[in-house]
Length: 119
Ligand code: SF4
Image (cartoon, rainbow, N blue to C red; front, side, top):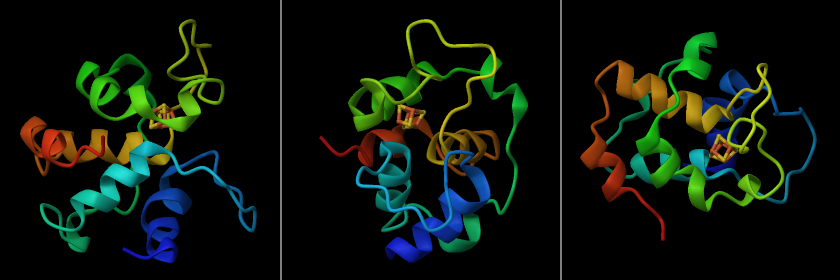
């Protein structure tokens, strides 16, 4: 998946933090994991095109936290959603949303996520 594909498939449709034309030095780990999944388990047509889900706040996934967020560069001081005391309106990044949607649609299993982990 090229950087452009990542922007078009993950950041632009799903991430409220994406700013058109702004260069981001760090990449969220959610996007990195999706990128890795696209080299095997997932096909481009599997990716939902839309679907930000406001109920995600109620559905914090321990698995996604452990396998994706814990080693994300943004978790130290850039991600309110995964902070120890998250504000009510905190939202996850597009990668997290997309991974959640793929679980909901049964296109991803927890074992798939374990295989896609970048240590
Ligand atoms: S939800 Fe936050 S910590 Fe988790 S992958 Fe996204 S930016 Fe990183």
